[in-house]
Image (cartoon, rainbow, N blue to C red; front, side):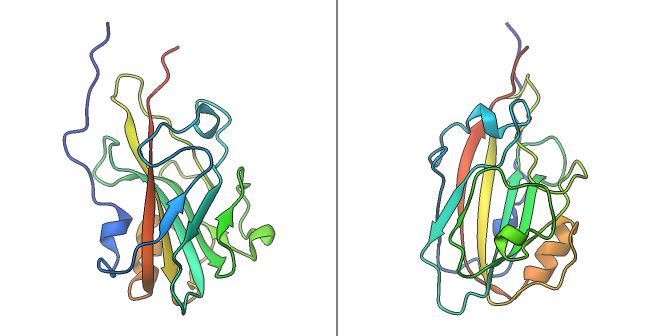
Length: 183
């Protein structure tokens, strides 16, 4: 039997790093998994690595765009491991389909852009925690913004958070769990 390790303390999430900590809450859901449940294998990097479908509601008036950030605060580094940065999603969109390609801009999503994950790729990078770790928590964070963001495709987490500062009208999250696969 292999000893498993647990992250001792979580890194700060984008949800807590941007202004608007008292912003109204969005309801974020996925048909693939419920809050606190396991993320299906197909959405992991051990599987097909396709992004899960997401929906949100309780969007406040004045919303001009949405941003989605997916982070793993249980990763063994100082900052959360970034699995996805998607931003400038038009305000009339309330759901994302499964398997969004790593393109940027995304014509099928009104020109939305994608940023760089912690492993340096553009687009969604599925969960891939080390096999010896306890399950990691993946935070699918959705932000309602009062503007479009003036940042290029391929931006990083810090640049995106800086651009979002002062523009968050509401935010919410869906947390999924994933455990490394033992071969």
